[in-house]
Length: 434
Image (cartoon, rainbow, N blue to C red; front, side, top):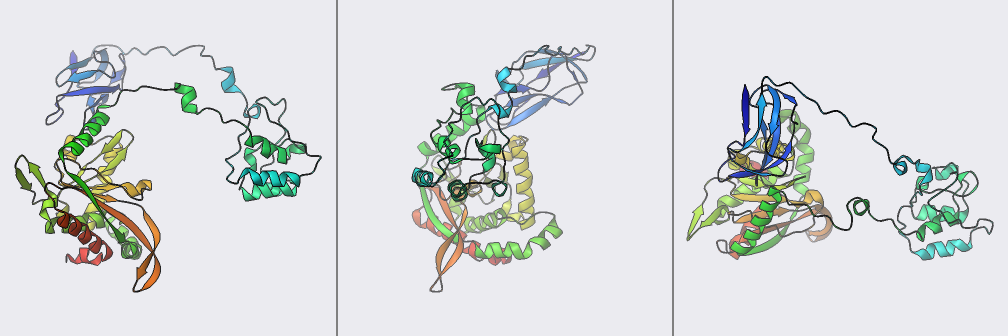
């Protein structure tokens, strides 16, 4: 008995996919419902399981091919015998790959000080220590002593090492017993850097076809610029009270709900409060009509190895702090593991993008159409702030709200962002729902 492996229904408005990779080869044994091939759509990746237990007898669509819903991918037979390909024999290992690291030049970490430091300290070096230019080949490498305290260094060398925080383990000393000389450091400054490993491996340029997900991201971001009147307004928020509240309640919160109290739950709650007060930010344009959403599905951007995805936290206004944190963790893990389904990405009404996790200080986030607003979070940096007439150091985060000016006026956008700021700076209001 033989069963066909076909492309399953992929969800609303999706008619084709790309064969990302086969997880099994022809001749491999498989169990019923075991994933055998991964498909990539413009929204999510999904694995196609084996319909029966047996052996893969045929593969009709190769990796990278585009297939439509219902197309034949291959077949599995119950009666076929498993055939495994023989391993490659006598694979030669390149001689240069097996060279001992002792025969390679050890690079010195970048020197932060100006060359003038070395020129001045050179004069203080003993005349007996002559510079030695390192080459790619060393007949017999002397043992390297890694710890500065265990080496007898000249004052000039010790000054250079100390001031520039040089790890002596990265320097091949040419002196007696591997002692690092001044010449060893200076010669490294004149050495030309080698080409990048990527250039060596792939050449001057490499051309790779964009994934379907990346193509969709590019298309939709361009659509957002072309089809909306984009504008961004900024504000800043003092994170002191939120950070203190998290610190004071973190242990109890974790013991009660088995999840950490993060920043995202505060931002989601603050956004919901502001969206209720400024419904245009939670609306969208459909032709010549404005569609006001009386539910609050918060999309949040998640960076993955394959690109940016924006899953949805549904009915956020009906969730507690603990529920928000649990749901965000669960959805984020699904996104990073490539296990999101179509439903996870649909129905959002407003988006939060947290570039701060990557160190972003400020940005102008772009709309996630057909939504009309997106909030950008950024990194928290201690900055001087005036508090009650005094200058104090405060943890400050910059906020950015990008919005569609066709539906949201400037007054609404500024007031919306100001309300978010006020609720974040007085986070107890979010618990009291005031």
